Length: 300
Image (cartoon, rainbow, N blue to C red):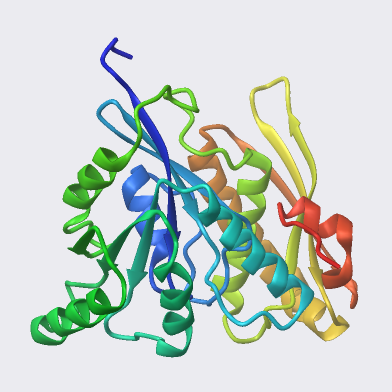
């Protein structure tokens, strides 16, 4: 660190489910921290990335998609999302111009319109969207909220992201960094490991497994030989779901474990021994302890 004046601040990343928030956070950080999945509502915890831009450190709060909460789990996710936006120095609203998801975008616009933070509108997927409708959408949304800036980016290719990152960095207040330079994510490795497994669960089971599954950490042991031993429990609500996760002769859970282990080995930079087992618990989403393990706040 030079003795130049450092800046540090919090950026809340908001948007309808599947707008590309996790992909954008990963682009800003420069490596994978938030799970990206085609299934909506996968970001349950306030997984944060830490982006550096010169002498500026930005804590990115990758908030869960805000949607109408029906179950206790949903309510906890929504409250985590808004807490993430409470202490922000800037609020970034990410919009997918192709699938606008107006029913989810409109309430979000209403809720952030009156917030005090500086707001930035980011229109994603410029690589795929047509120019005229894109500009019309920017104008329309700009009429509803007083945005400090509007950016057109592609979270997938990174197009337009560096300019937006520099502008965000300039908005951050002067102050000391909150995290050491080498610590890019405050998500503990244990939590990151469960997120990676959960992402594989979604990717490999697509439509077969509903959103009623969770991955809970059991043991995380650093072995003397420099490798790490990770034990996780996959919890589903019904026995037939358990059979789906296991697969014929255990083939599916083996494939999930193998893919997750590979990715974890790369992310953690050490050899990983991953042990998964599946448990049926029809009441898991009412379990206070499990919520806390997933980094969510229990609200009765």
